[in-house]
Length: 192
Image (cartoon, rainbow, N blue to C red; front, top):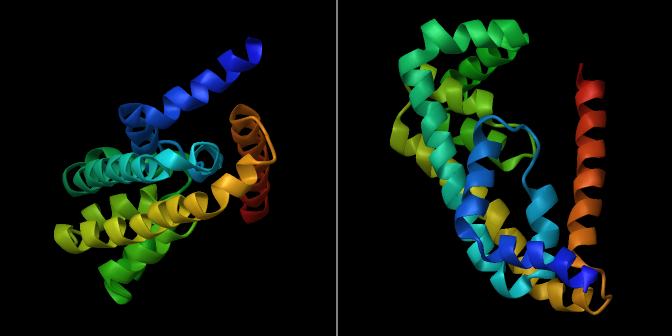
């Protein structure tokens, strides 16, 4: 019975599109840890729902990116820049603004969004630099779509085989979160 309760939360999460979208919204705005540490094992454990999981997190990401673009447009001077100064991220922000102007909005946003790097500064930068919103949205939609729906395809292909190993989905998610968090923390420390 206790095992059923542990597995129940992952099944509920896999079917709860609003919760998944909210998690993705948070990841694309204020939480700098890649969402894949949670959804990859969730998709593998619940491979029948992998596409709906990908759709929910993709939509949540688009909503969060749109919010940060808007914050960049309307609140760059009074709010965003002082917060970036306080966090010590102003030089990174200025560098991204340079990239947006030099390399082009689409490819800069696409590459930042496709990589595991946090994309919040790029979304704020695109707004603060008054980039074309439709190009911005196309870059986010395509890059994150490739990440999330590509992960869903892999989960559908390999999820049934991995499920044969009988690793409880809850443990799979917890293990991925611990490993992903450790890797992310290590990369953050090495980058400073």
